Image (tube, rainbow, N blue to C red; front, side):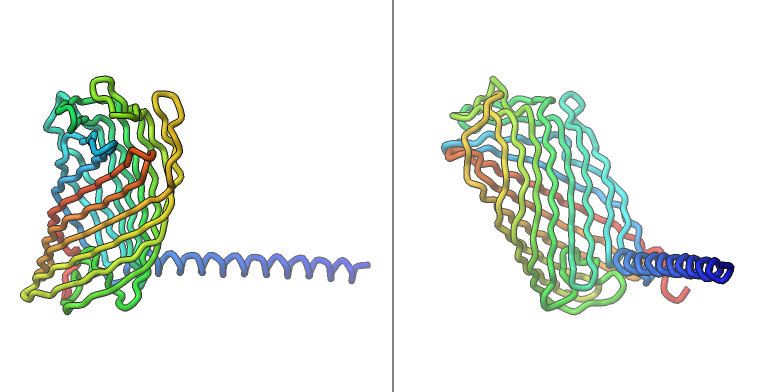
Length: 320
């Protein structure tokens, strides 16, 4: 009996020890995965950055060759951020010059690259828009209009590890030669917009109140980096995609007619960079365009524009 109890006790202890060993191994694997995915081990790639930018989150509803435009106020902003060759994180603060008709804004943008994988993500929430009617030449500010949009792009880089979405990402640690790259991947997109209809500016045939939708599709892109010399660089990134989107459109508390589910995306990113020793200056212009039909007559077009001037400081100096 004692031998049996001793064998059972030893077996339980062995199983417990084996379980503890497996847990430690799992933790090590997770830590290594996170470390390789997000952490740039070369400290000379790390930089702090300050920037000023102009960002506009505007959208149009085109109906029978007429256009109703929704444009926010106060596009200027300033911000701070952190960047390495793997990840960029910027936080912007809006400058409110128009105090009578302010637009409330919340913006997040994150981009990440690891070897041949490139991902960028944005989230915008705006409240308060100027509404312009091209057909009737009327404009009015409505503080109740709310627009939430979010998107994510993933690119697998085929022929080069440097996908030149941001020139400084490739040249921040060393000089780079002129090169180009191609990528394929996918994208996702989400919108939530409410209180769009205003009696003073009616749409021609669709009194649209709310627009909700989410979708995604396939994406292809090309980019190139031009090394001008003396630390000057220019890059251009073009992406295009097509897919499908599920939408729910409300016309003054009534469901709108169904439309096709096509969704299109175009994105361009022009970048100029100057890198010198421990500093860099980066000027870039980024445009995203999403388009989908709301009905047989109406089309929804979203334009997200971001122009940014960045001053970067590399935290660690080589040779110190």
